[in-house]
Image (cartoon, rainbow, N blue to C red; front, side):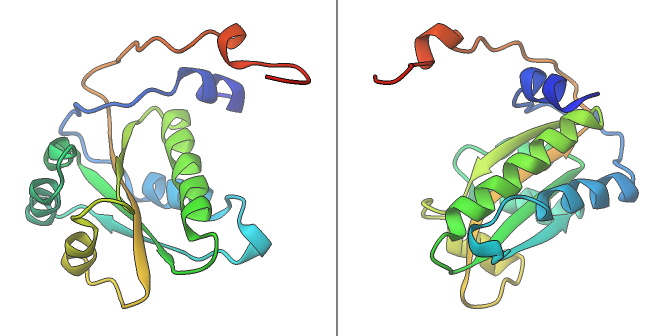
Length: 163
């Protein structure tokens, strides 16, 4: 799948088949994430792959809108050191991972982190060191659904020269 197709067909998937995701594919997704744009090339990110079912369940129970993490074969927790642009950098890395997942035929869903009250508890559950912020949790797996959400038309979002 080329990049444009991945961009135009990526959707949030919240239902997964139980099929495991090969380690090499997970490594490739994280590799794509770590190659994201980063302010001043600081690259403040760290990625924790959670395949253990019990830990995924504890993470899911801690979230408000991420209960489906329990059923995903993998959850990748994206953390960033507290730097000036940690949120932008971590978000870029997360988006790269979502697109790479689509290109590999996987489903994924971004679960919010940074501004959520549960963020410190997620960091504690995965043993994150002091000074790191939770950016996102990405549920990954082979999709058991293929959502078709509508997007705003280009004409509604594109403006030339002025709003």
